[in-house]
Image (tube, rainbow, N blue to C red; front, side, top):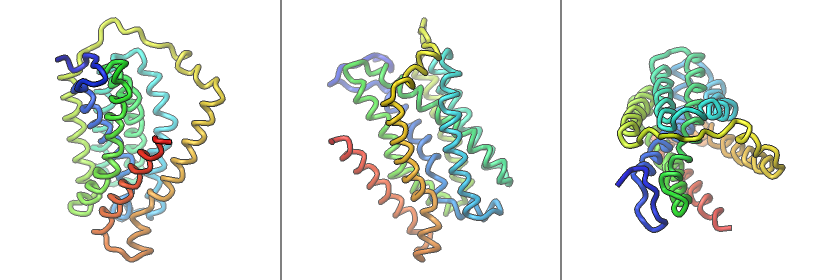
Length: 270
C-alpha cells in the first residue's frame, strides 16, 4: 500500500498521517516546552524570569508573522521538500540554542524555530488530508492534530522532566535529534509529487476578504492569548508563589494538558 494512497472512510489511514502527527507533536512540544523549564533557562542565560518569557513571545511572533509568509513563499516547492526543509530548520534552531550561552542568540533561534513550525503545520495538514482522500480527510486531520494534544499532555511534561534532570539544553538536543529522524523517514515514505499545480498567492489571500474569517481570527487570538498568559509562567508561579517543588511541575503540566484535551473534545460536540 502506498503511503500516500487515498483511503476510504472506514479503512486504515496511510502511514504518512501518523508520521505527520509525530512531526506535529515535536512542533507543538517546542512551542510550549519553555513553560516547564523557564526558571532554569533564565538562570543559565543570566536573565530574569520575566525577560526569559520573551522566548515564548518571540516564538508567538515568529508563528504569527513568519508562518504565513514562509508558507506563501514555499507554495511552488514540492510539499515533501517543504516538510524536510522545515524539519531541518527546526533542528538547526534547537541546535543553535543548545550550543549558545547568549540570550539574544537563543531568542533568535526561537524565532527561526517558529518559522519552521508554521511552515510545517500548514503543509502537513494538506499532505495528510490529500493522502487520506475526501472520505477520510477529516479523520486524517484529527489524527495529525492529535500530535498537538499529545504534546501538551506528554511532550511538555516529559521535556520539563528531562530539563530538570540534565538541563534545558538536553531537552533541546533531544528535539534536534527527533526532528532529524522524522525528516529522514519523510524522505523515505513521502514520494516527490509529479505535475502538481501550485495555487497562486492571490487565491490564498482571497479568504481574508470574508468578514467571518476576521471574526474567527480575533476569537482565536483572544483564546490563545488567555491560554499563553497562564501557561507561560506556570512553572515560576508554582515554585515561587505556591511553594511547590520543581518535581511537581511536570505533574501539574500533565493535568493542564488533560484539561486542554477535554476542553477541545467537549467543545467539538457543541
